[in-house]
Length: 121
Length: 107
Image (cartoon, rainbow over all chains, first blue to last red; front, side, top):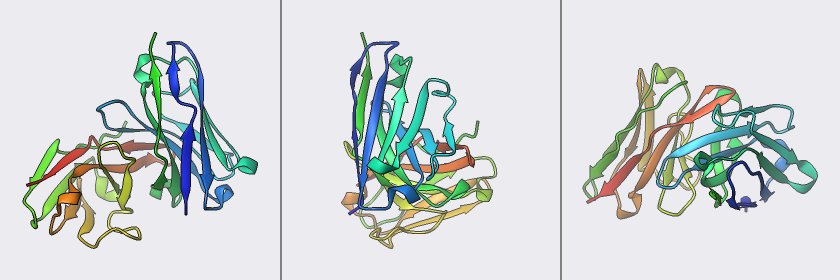
C-alpha cells in the first residue's frame, strides 16, 4: 500500500524555523517527484514546492521562495521541507503528496494525512 | 500569476447531477486535475488530465475542459459526495495553482 506519513509539525515562534519530514512507503520513492501543499485553517489548498525524482530540480511558490527548502533522501525514502523565517501566514496543515505524471501534467495522486504548523508567540 | 475561479458552493439533490466549474484564462490548453476533500481529511484525486479517473473512483465522476472553463460533473449524486472540491493545474512546469474550492452540498 502506498503511504505517506508527515511529521515535524508543531508550535513555533515568529521568525523561527521548523523541518517537516514525510516518510514514504509502498512505492519506489526514487522514481517519483514529490510536492508539498498546505492549507491554512478554514482556507483552500495552496501549492508550496516540488522536487524532481532525482532531486535535481526544485521549485517554490512565490510566498515561500527564499525561506523554504525542499529536499529528499532516497536512502531513507523521506521528503523534507526546511522552513525558515516563519510568520503567522505560514500557519497551516502541511501535506506531502506524490507526483503522478510529468511536467505540466503532474497530478498529486497520493497524499499524507498532514502535519499542523502553528506560528505564534 | 495564473488564477483559477470556482463557485463558492454548489447544491445538488440526491440522485441528480452536480457540475462544478473552474475558470481560467485559456484553461482548455492546460491539463486540469480535480480533488475531493472531506472535513479533517487529506484531499483525494478524483479526476486527472481533464477527464481521467484514478482507480477506485466511481464512473459517476467525470471531467471536461474547453475554452476558459473546466468542469467536474458528479452524476447520480450520493450523500457521500458532499465535500469540498478543488481544481489544480500547472501554470508552468515550475509553478502549480489550486482553484478557490467549491463546497458541494447534497440535499
